[in-house]
Image 1 (tube, helix red, strand yellow):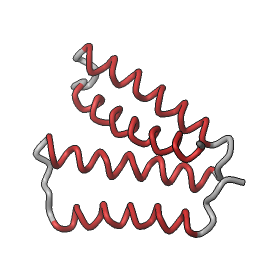
Image 2 (cartoon, one colour; image 1 turned 180 degrees about the horizontal axis):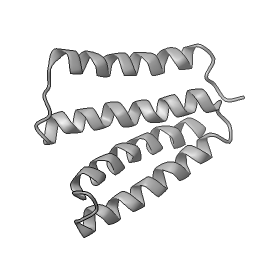
Image 3 (cartoon, one colour; image 1 turned 90 degrees about the horizontal axis):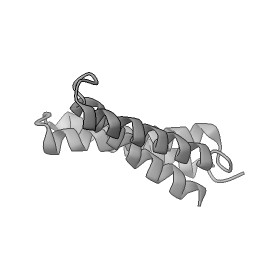
Image 4 (cartoon, helix red, strand yellow; image 1 turned 180 degrees about the vertical axis):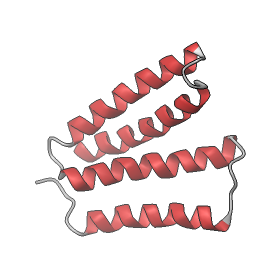
Length: 108
């Protein structure tokens, strides 16, 4: 269950990053509210996951999902460049998260 918390928390990290962009520096009400709600949910889920998982691995997974997810959303919906290097970098983030887990990132 701890991994589920961290993974879903990482998805909420993507949501809070997108909400932050859409808030236009907290000048738009609903995206600002969305940011506040999603950042709290994301942090709560990460905190629940950290009850059982090593902090380094769980945090890397959480931030990796957030970083890769935000980059993908940016390319799909915000006209961020979808270059080979950007896509390769996302692949490296995902690979790093997988390697951390294989290196003993299970629950303790």
